[in-house]
Length: 214
Image 1 (cartoon, rainbow, N blue to C red):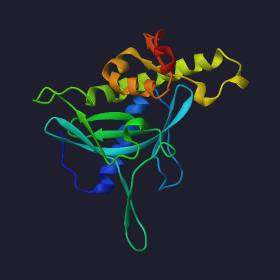
Image 2 (image 1 turned 180 degrees about the vertical axis):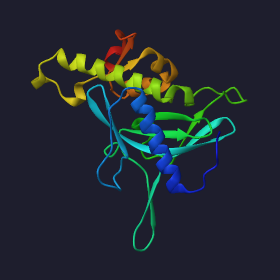
Image 3 (image 1 turned 90 degrees about the horizontal axis):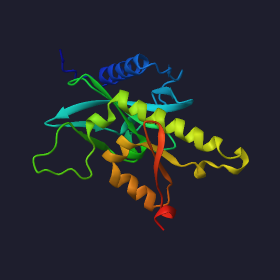
Image 4 (image 1 turned 90 degrees about the vertical axis):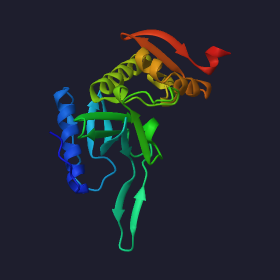
């Protein structure tokens, strides 16, 4: 049963506990920083790397899960609100008590933003472009996508001598389901010069890149 909670500190603590429990139930090692006031609340070990995760409380309004992204802290003179950057965290995890569901959103979607809306159902006007569907970011599926991407990256790095492979040379590996749901976004990244490798059931499928298009 959902019980409304007004205390922001209680919301944050509950969200962190729910997210950590959900990740643990999926078999992920979950770590917590020993000091407070850091930019991330938890770390997940996914595909052999640590993912810095900031935890948030989410609310439902009509057909949308709303995730408020800024963090707030007090100085001696005022309250400061800041957004997150890719140098600080790798993902935002959000817990929605009304649905009792956890979501994991990559930094690409939340960097420098103040809010993010995840749709539960299509809007009445029929719009589908540029929407983020809540089902695509539910924790089990989001973790599976990250593991698939990490496995693909390791295969690519292993195919070349370490000395000749730089971080910028490693392609982005994405599953076919993820590409289908966010095709326009990945197309823009490919047009900007990023090398996108698409897998289906863990096997290489197609490649998107500016070089391939030319």
